[in-house]
Image 1 (spheres, rainbow, N blue to C red):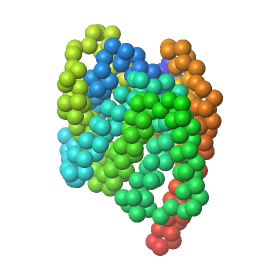
Image 2 (spheres, helix red, strand yellow):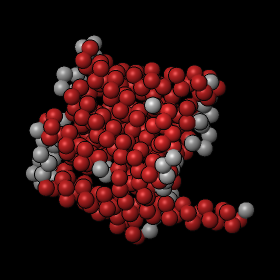
Image 3 (tube, one colour):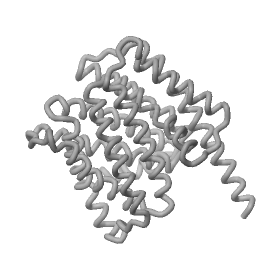
Length: 304
């Protein structure tokens, strides 16, 4: 029965499989955020981050055994170390921010990651950006301000999430640079391994042994987070990011639904307006990035 289902899935067009995987990725990400909110009702966010990281490493160990110990070799130890620190800060900020912010608002603000990634690429990699992408980034940041509504109630949660988005963007740029020298197995394992001592130190003042129910929630936070990245990577391997990115924004719908069901949250109209501006900006940035990559690829193919 399972083999028949698997074979029928394999017969589907790669683009359709990519769409399905992208939708599943978004649903898993929204579920993870919801579980973080539930877990932090009784535990400190840093403690939840620590146990989530432990479970991620346990889940990943069979992959390491299959790939072999040599798959964990590290070439750029310094950058791996910096990435672990920055990634730890990003995750703790996101866990803390999500614990005190409406799910829909948190999701909308996390959509700013591509904007901050572009800004950091300009600053650190001297990436040249045209006037249209600058305009898209300004529109995206304006959308983020509408979501936050600093004129009414700025709040700590949204600010922490935005800082988490900035540090996560820095972590992604480091990961991009590491792909030239490290294997995917090595990058994933050492990122998780580095997060354990970092989150343990941050959570130590609040550390206590969670109950069975809380540990189960932390385990499913790890599962949904792992599935989010697995499905996202699998989708990107089958279709271009420009065609998949709009599907990622369905996360906002899932987050609104989960926020209403579990926490009786009803998002303000400003969240929808601000989200629309952020989505337009990040979609255009992704479109321009893909177009630029195609031009570079064409030039390389011509030269060789």
